[in-house]
Image (cartoon, rainbow, N blue to C red; front, side, top):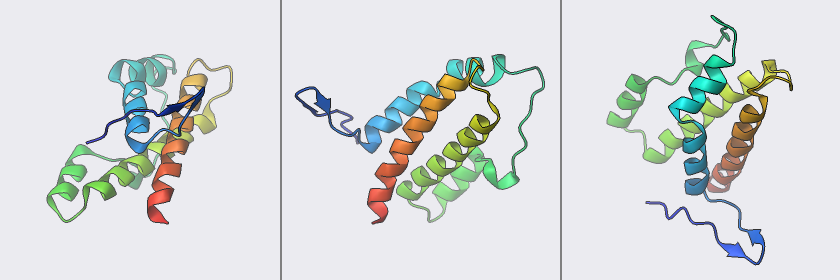
Length: 122
């Protein structure tokens, strides 16, 4: 379990933990927000080509979970696939696009989460 609490020292907040960053991402990735920023603000039938390996399907997660893959490895896999997808979207968005700021915020949160994960691998 994650306490998800930011320690505040004076006016400076400590770096958010994995749990806090994951909570912030969960809030940003709520269905309504994804629908608005990643569907409604895009042209009808707009598609972005991705490789088969870049799609993380629930059935694949269940298969991995039922296998020998650890919860930590699954979290990292979700992070990797999701952050790469957001980067691909950001590459095609002009700054004037109504979803640009939302996508930038997702990238910032994924970057911070990547920093957290890199600590574990050292």
